[in-house]
Image (cartoon, rainbow, N blue to C red; front, side, top):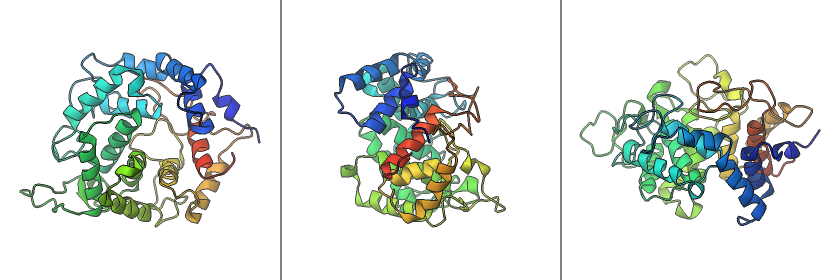
Amino acid sequence: MADPLSWLLEPQDPGVRYLAMRELLDPPVDDPDLLAVQQAAHKQGPIAAILDKMNPDGYWARPGAGYNPKYYSTGWSLITLAQLGASITMDMRISQACDYLLKTALTKTGQFSMNGTPSATIDCLQGNLCAALVMLGCDDPRLALAYEWMARTVTGEGLAPAEERQAPLRYFSAKCGPGFACGYNGGLPCAWGAAKVLLAFSRWPADQHTPLMERAIRQGVDFLLSRDPARADYPTRNAAKPSVNWWKFGFPVFYITDLLQVLEALVALGFGTDPRLAHALELVRQKQDEQGRWALEYDYTGKTWVDFGSKKQPNKWVTLRVLKVLQICGQKP
C-alpha cells in the first residue's frame, strides 16, 4: 500500500499541505517551513476565497445570526474555515467574523442560536460553532458560557423541562432534553449532535474542563459507545435503519455526521485504543484505495463558497482526516 503523505504535501495545494505538516509531522510551532506554508494557505486557495466573500462588517451572505442561507452564511463559513485550519493570528478578518457571530448568534444564557433567540438552539449547531471558534483561535470569555450551557444540556443539571416557560434555564422544542435528546429526532438522543458536542469538548483546553464538562463528556462517550459505531444503529425517528450518510466520508462536515467524525471526537478525547472502536477503524481501512487514499463520498459541491473535489474520487481533505485519526490511535495507514 502506497503512503499518501507525500501526496498531501504536494506544494500546489498549500491548504492541505499546511494541515498535513501541522497535524501529521508535528513540527515546532515556530518552524520556518510550517510558518511559510501557513501563510501561503491563508493567501491562496480555499481560506482566501472564503475570506474574500466576507462582508466588511464581519458576516457572510446576509447580516444576522448566520444560519441561513446554507451553507454560505456566517456560521457555516466559520465552520468551514476552522476545518481548513484558518487562524485568527493570520488574518484580522477572522477575528472580526468571530466577534460578529458571538454578538449575533450567542444568547445571554449561552445558546448558539439559528436566529438569536434561546429557543432556536440545537446540539449540532452548538457543538459545531463552539468547536469552530476554538479551532480558529478565538479566545473570548463568552465562549466559556457557551460551553457551560452545552455541558448542562447533556447532563440536565440546572435545566427545567421545556414546558416550564418561566424558568431562567430550560430545554426547548429542538434541544428538548438531556442526553442529546433532539426534537428533530423525535425526542430521541441524536448521535449526530453527540458527535459535534464531544468534538467541541475535545477542542476546549483540558485545563479548563470543569467537573460539569467532564460529566457531560463521560455521558457523551458512553452514549456513542453504547452501540458499535461501525453499525451506527443509534436511535432515530426513522427506526428502520440508520442514515446511509454515516458511511459516506466527506469534507467539510456540517450537521450531517459521518463515522469518521465520531472517531475524530472519540480519539481526540483519549479513546483511540478503546477496543469498541476496532470495527469502525477496520471499516475506515477498507475504504482505502491501492494508492493509500480515501475518496470524497459526501460533498457540498455548488453549495459552499468553495468546492473540495469530485465525488467518489480520491480526496486530500478526506485522506487527511483519516490519517490524523489513525496517527492518534497509533496505527500506520
